[in-house]
Amino acid sequence: MRAYERLVRYAQADTAAVEGADSTPSSQGQLRFARMLAGELTELGAKDVYADEYAYVYARLPASPGMEDRPCVGFLAHLDTVPDFPGDKVRPRVIENYDGGDVALPAGGRVLSPRDFPHLTALKGHTLVVTDGTTVLGADDKAGVAEIMTAVERITAEGIPHGPVAVGFCPDEEIGHGAGLLDLERFGAELAYTLDGGDVGEIEYENFNAASAELKVRGFNVHPGSAKNTMINAMLVAMEFNRMLPEGDTPRDTELYEGFFHLIGAEGGVESARLEYIIRDHDAGAFEARKNMMRHAAKLLNGKYGEGTVELTLKEQYRNMLEMVKPRFEVVEKAMEATRDLGLEPKTVPVRGGTDGAQLSYRGLPCPNLPTGSFAHHGPYEHASAEKMDMCVQLVLNILKRFAE
Image (tube, rainbow, N blue to C red; front, top):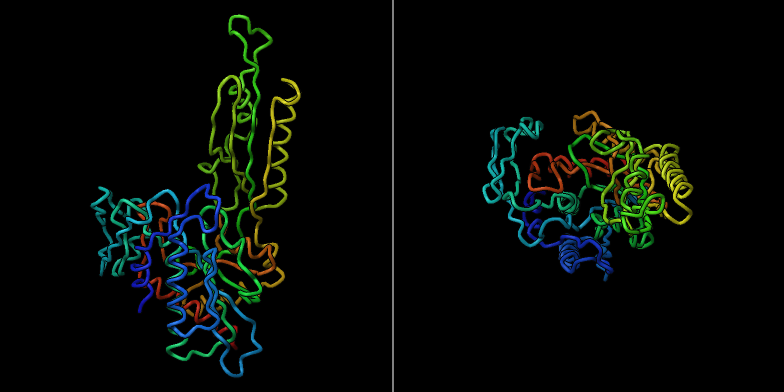
């Protein structure tokens, strides 16, 4: 079975994550999907297959005879899809021999067009998997799941020589939980890769340092007719705080390695106000400077309006995996060699977000990210190329070949 055929089937499983849920997994559909995959892995001949109560799936492919001393290489993908779209209404459509032009997504009244997605012209002649225009496709990250499963099928069916292989699937990546509860001892890999990216040829081993920030403002409300030098309007103080941040350091105005402050929520009035931000930067020093800039702004406002007017809470979310990947950089080098084996020159692309690999790298498992041949994630224009998915499967096999040498 080709990877895109698995994607079409997997896309219809309801695995949308639920923001704010107090359990793992955040949705029962992920648990059902995890158990289904565990059953398929067993049928494909994988060993030590296990799906736990948190929807983490583990499996192993024992080394080929004579290759037991090779490092155990792991491959991971996440089960969930974004919480913004219903997971039970995904209706994928397959377009064979795509003509390179506009594709109508009739149920949603949308058009997938090269005008908006210029890379589509390079997919002329491919088989595309698209949405009906009302939901995401779920290729983020069921394309990665499908590719790993297809690689397992080929390894076992074709008897491809390999060292020890670990397979893992994780829930709730889209809501920030991801690989946090993955049992690394049970998983058993020495080096690993997530398949959770974009175009073939891209290798991601740098991501943002990330934190969240919450600003609470306590106002002082009196009658506006007698408010001179007395009233403290909490919302105006919150707006003053935001003006202290660099105006051009927003997601809209930045790219590549440039960091930002992203205001994601605001509420309040005269009596109280609250702002929510996320803070991102690839450079560790610049990341610390951004947090310090917020601390300084809060200090100035408390000095101006009285101590306790402003309360700033900063929470670390994840760190740039590069710091942890560097000591075992062969994990990147092997992926680059495997990409060249496909006839492509590898491109290193900074992740303007986070991945399960970032969490795992900081837990001691170096884990860069590989592509899936899917595009326009997190929206109804999401699509995947069957041919590029095939190449991603071959990339996995090429990596194992390189480690087996």
